[in-house]
Image (cartoon, rainbow, N blue to C red; front, side, top):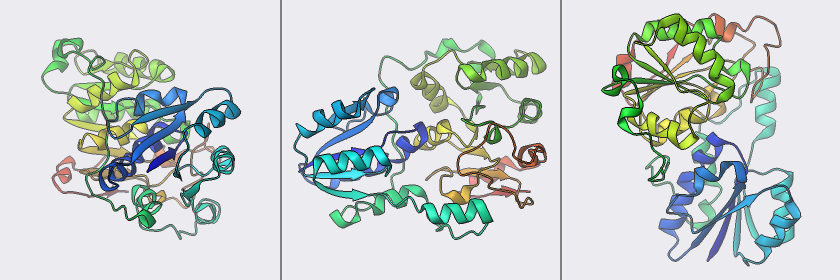
Length: 329
């Protein structure tokens, strides 16, 4: 049996599909598993031992389709369900299983705040896509495989952060999913332990503002300096991970790290909270404008960004001793 899995983006979503990959490989004897994503996400799947071959979308969908046709798949599993994956399924003409994006339920929740979302994590909804094949969730959580050559050496961090540190993923694709920088400073001051800031080049300036405000003994800013796998290796070494609703949160869950996740315009009820690991959810439940988007905005549509500006940091991290607890305003 030759199986193609489709998921083009993004970091968190691809990591959240890893239980499907593993369960297919382990439960369908002799199955050959291929995975197709965008080239920019190559590092997320290249070292996954449950994937037999990777395919990447560069700049030409017809070229990709031509390449996939040569593989003569038996089954296509579409975990993205968008126009491009629909075109691929039509071109291949093979038996296909497609992820239900429940767009109507999301629209009702975001547009009218009518919560008809299922009380099911998106990983379990991904797994439902393949249940007809007799594949079931093994409940082992997410996977993330680091290549041997990329992890950060122990002496990369300054002496103050080498023995123990907290990782804080300060990024987020949209501004409404991130704390304002002055509130990040407030949070880091409350943490009061050595903190390693993680993010991409766009987060570099915010990281430097935090470092200058709190000093080098408390803050080490790696934003924009590391590859994704290098950042992931620091997440793996951290004692605790703080994160906005972003891809590194799911990478931390793959490493079974205790996580304190911070939510702005999106909500955990969309089904993408930390999976199968100890975590606290920090969110402002007193607002009737959340969620204002299932993804995010460049600025608050109402101009106040109260979901982050009014968020309380009066939570008890010892609640992480439990398997799943939520701290809410």
